[in-house]
Image (cartoon, rainbow, N blue to C red; front, side):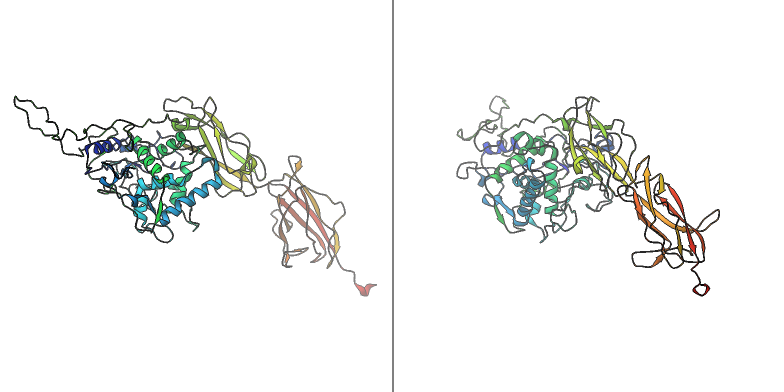
Length: 576
């Protein structure tokens, strides 16, 4: 998600009172923030390799892409300064394109099924979608919900915006030099790599698809333990999307508007934001502080009075409202200031460091030794308590935390540390990653982990009878037991192979054999021990010239056992 700087002002208001209120609400500069920006790989802190350090300026890791600052109509259409006098269309503004509205509502239902405590309202997604892309440019999407043409923010090349070099090789934004915000919810490509979702079930995660983008935005807004039914958590969620008072006020105004009622309109007929497109911002550059906004009404006369006074003359009509901003609390007018909630503990974290987690290795079915632990600190290097850290198992693995969870959220202690629950290895061997991330931020670090195959260091034959059979007949059952460090070794792979004599034995193509699942004769077969470490080999048939043959068993982990099989000549019936 690009951090976006509003560039739009109401123009042509019929009264100076309404115009002044609009200017106060829409002062188009804001502080940079750290919205939806993914950890690119594993940056441990926002101070480690931020776009700002690359020369991007005030946009932080977000890039100062603009957003639409149009406000919804006021609720007094028959009074002076009503919505009819502002550059918006009245009742039509409550209309949301059918596919876009369906995507928001589906995202709400999906998130409710996985994170009911978040209480995500679809109207919040609609408010953000309105501000970010004008509801996918008025609902210009195909039947699957994908925009008919890409919705791209400006190149984040450091020229008026943050400098964010390409992270997706142009896959999403078509730019192999710099990143751009993409799609109806304006995700930066590296963010999409972390938060992307498949909202329409087509097997793809596409930031240009409104179903995918809405679901991804919903998950992001619900990060950590947020309850969006509370004003504080809702404000924090919006500010995490874009840390700007103006952005918060704008989204809040549309959220309130949509909560009062909406209706569905056909795709492609939604109301587009007024004025020049905010996706082509021109030469102005946000500076991070209050900007000088153009006067929305004609300036007072500069004609001096007799005597040389330079004081402007009063308006001709003394009943005309003052150009000063209206008082806070006037009904129907946006507030001039909105208190910014104190940063949550999570939002104060700038670094997440490994506190001594060593090599993470476990045998399939076992438990990883040691804790996966991190320490959260702020910009001053002090520990941050009560920050939400989510540990997630990623990659092709069936490994999980206690209770079978793939993702768990832990609060940091007073010393800033947080430890993941015990990690239990699955049966799938190989490498995977455990990612630790501070909720609602891009601060993260990762740990590599490996699951190795079950092992046995000892193989013992459990039968005592000599294994002798007449050619053409079968040997008695061959049974063995596998153990590892004195304990039964279950589910261990064991290879049974008939071998030749000599210093370097090889597979013997003569002598006893068993059969595979298709009944074909084989002299090498891979088997698996039972949970108690026992193993019963398939029937072996006596074959080949009379003599003694060797059957070698080799277990995963290095244990070996050689068993002798003796083939006797079949008696000559004529001799008797």
